[in-house]
Length: 162
Image 1: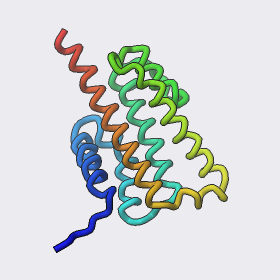
Image 2: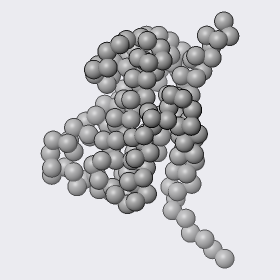
Image 3: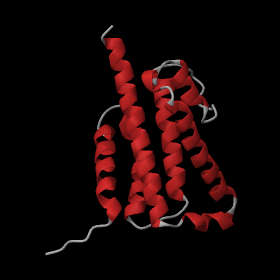
Image 4: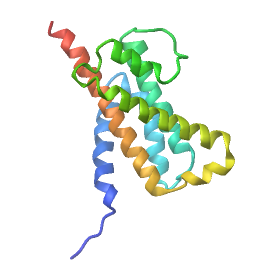
């Protein structure tokens, strides 16, 4: 018997399991609501502008929790998106992986640009009604969220062992 699977389904399941495991831990449950909402839309076949918007704002929420609520590096919840990764770099959050800051900022900038386009220009909204594109976004953002939250755990654990 031959069974066909969509190529992305296994990778999507894997990253979603990892993110769901994180969502069961404090303070990440509420913080990952946007990711979960976007994933549900994806599963329902709603490949509209809400997926990138929810994912973009979810990354921002996770970064705010790390920078403001958990580490108290600032109390300003109104900073521009790029300021949070800069703050993480300034506080050695990335330590050996500091070189990734530029790439992470580029990723956020591309999401930011895309969200602005689909929010401001109704003609652009249909350009993102695509399963393949939504798959890419969810997989990238899920992996990024997983990276940030696990990096935060490593960051806080290093100070517990001092």
